[in-house]
Length: 269
Ligand code: UP6
Image (cartoon, rainbow, N blue to C red; front, side):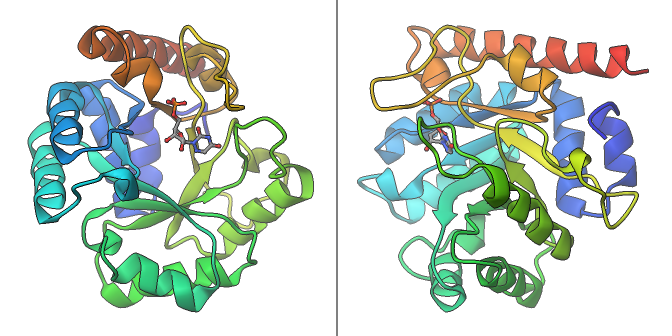
């Protein structure tokens, strides 16, 4: 369904959270997810405030914030409302179902309270998704969803082939809470879907306009390459927040991502 516009997909999608995500993208003309990997509350909130107008989603690693507290969460929640973006905690849940429910719902980070989107690996099998789905359904909050981490961008990643295929199969069993995937490209159109309306959202990490990778195995593609591969939302971190001028940088990523998106929907209409 990546040939359709975000607006068309929003209309047909069953998930209120995906509808909201697509609506934000259309309203702000952006498919950028800022990976805000800052390590203090001040730095995190400052970048979220300055770049908020240009992004659709802010992705956090909340456990790297050294002075994490209620002011971190209150600040993020207020900025998400003020600038109209969603919050995605890149927690990469990976344990048995019973443990991830505790990690998601409670603990020091209280992720379920504030993060619209979370992600999880299926290394542990289907039970992890069943557990997170159960927590979401039991809480009865409509704007919560899961992305399955179906591939990874780091060199030598073992999340390939059968593992990636299994991610798609499991996603199909939990349509009420699994929104889609974190992957380098679109995954689900190659195997027959259970429902003709299936519309998984693809978030792509490892996006950078000027670098090919880092010294620790990260591998990048450009916004244009990612969008051509069927990605819907582009996750960029250092390419934006570590630039000399992050506001100029985020605008460049926004333009590159939006141009590539328009190109894609034009060429298939
Ligand atoms: N991330 C990846 N690759 C994956 C999954 N997640 O890079 O396969 C996350 C990293 C980081 C961000 O944890 O938060 O995406 C990438 O940041 P960067 O743009 O600064 O490399």
